[in-house]
Image 1 (tube, rainbow, N blue to C red):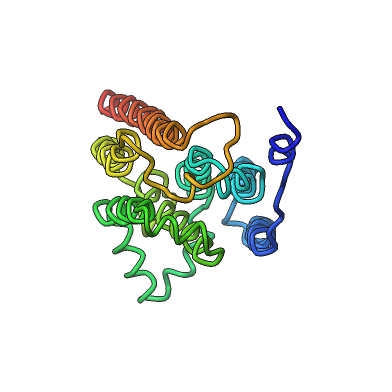
Image 2: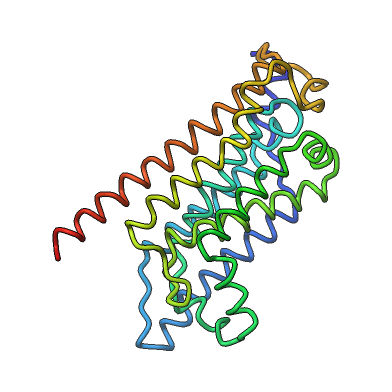
Length: 263
């Protein structure tokens, strides 16, 4: 490993907007789980939830300020796909499953917000929004715009994370106003999500030439060609998401089977 590559692997970028926003979210969560149960005896909080939520925040930090971010932005498309997996399929479900109903329920007293959230978290809408957003941002021209403009790149990541949270609510929601799907209905929901990934996976993986000019011009590290890097990125996306979706389908199936046999 040469000095150039070594410096990339140890190069952390503590972007102020990332550190400030994620620190605020974490501290606000900790304040709520300490203050509200303390002042309302009807509310309890499991410390396990705090651990899961904090893990989600830490994964977002790793995705956005660690060397993964540096490599994905300036060198390898495949690293960008690792980053996108962290931002959409790993951190968001942790945040959703660790957010209890009592923490969110006050905002449902605002009717327009309640109606909007209930609309966009309907299963067909939730998976469509996420799939569409993920696919559009991987169009070559828009992708190039995002990696060459810092603020557009921030917008892309915010859209990824927000639509991913919406997409995971039908699976992991603990909010009474936004109930999660039954285990039986989770099976087709997750299956359709996995199929939607093909819209991005297929052209990236099976293209005979690189389609992202940014990585064609990027400095080469580890002797990976732009086409190999692109194909590796597609495989990482499909195998990574496939493993997550398959695991969730297996869990949903056995939970459904268990429920059926308890009747």
